[in-house]
Image (cartoon, rainbow, N blue to C red; front, side):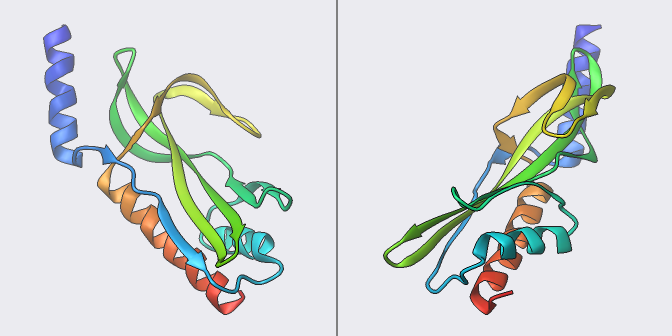
Length: 153
């Protein structure tokens, strides 16, 4: 049984692409707008990622967790999907604002989890890596945020 699960996992990884180390999208906004945090929240929402927490004091915007439907491996011998959220951090510096866009990911059992207001509950494992298509999503979202902060919205 364990051999079949291992073979199935390798087959799934081969078919979907192997995960890699996440590369957060980072840039410096030389002249960020005064409402940069709100601007980021609007940009995330416009791109289909509803903000969950908007903290103007710390400059951090976090989206709601979402089930991507992307099957990836197993959790406790049950097929798993990737669940993710995005976090944007705006740190003011003398040169403007250092902005980082990253993805938090979890691998959760299909049908074995629920998404609450602030967290995912159930049979899940944190992911430190990212699949190539999600890295591409992260890069595209980062470009949208960068464009919004450079043009003021």
